[in-house]
Length: 275
Ligand SMILES: Nc1ncnc2c1ncn2[C@@H]1O[C@H](COP(=O)(O)OP(=O)(O)OP(=O)(O)O)[C@@H](O)[C@H]1O
Image (cartoon, rainbow, N blue to C red; front, side, top):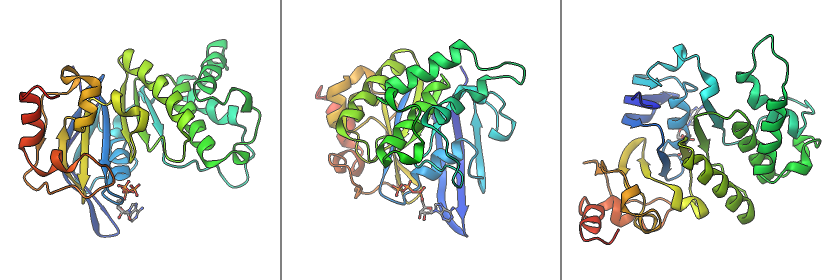
């Protein structure tokens, strides 16, 4: 089986500063991965690099076995960026932005079909914006705009979702709605990589956590201990390991120092049947 993403020795340098350093990771189809870490640790840069949106200064990245520049099947990928950037003064409506998620599925010769319209309607429904389709996106709040971006990705019906802080600024009800939608996607075998600070209702869905620290992978494996109770040990991947350069985590998530700071905690907890 081809991995959805493989990064080998990934290095990103921006303005002469190393932002990602020696990142090795592979994400298989069907995984639900959260990328954690303090502000500025490189989370957005990592997911953008996985999509070829940020060039590597070293190492390589493969998207379904191909370098992003040679990848053609973009309909398989849905990306939710951190922020909505609508070009200067273009009065795009919510429905137009969400419909743009279908573009990779449309050929030059095929007009918008009933299936396109249905996918857009379902996506708007899934994020609780069914009644806002005709509104200009820039009339929406930040959290609502975030939900528009999520709907745009959903509308494309991709195989893999890459979401950069999809819950940032999104209220509790909408987070629960999103969690329900993502749970369905997980059931259907979709792959999800999401950047988050607060997991909230998404926590039980996570099968693997990657923690960045200063652009390096400090932890890759089991999600936080509290999560493991939620998903059961069977859902946790068996390949967790703590990198030698890992230190006590000082990021925003509670419950992590034990997992990050020592090799023993996750493994022992699992061995002792606590997970
Ligand atoms: N275009 C850019 N040019 C120069 N430096 C950049 C650029 N984009 C990001 N950086 C720097 O790279 C580092 C990592 O940024 P990144 O956005 O990947 O972090 P993050 O972990 O996603 O942070 P946050 O939690 O605040 O979203 C930061 O120090 C940032 O200043």
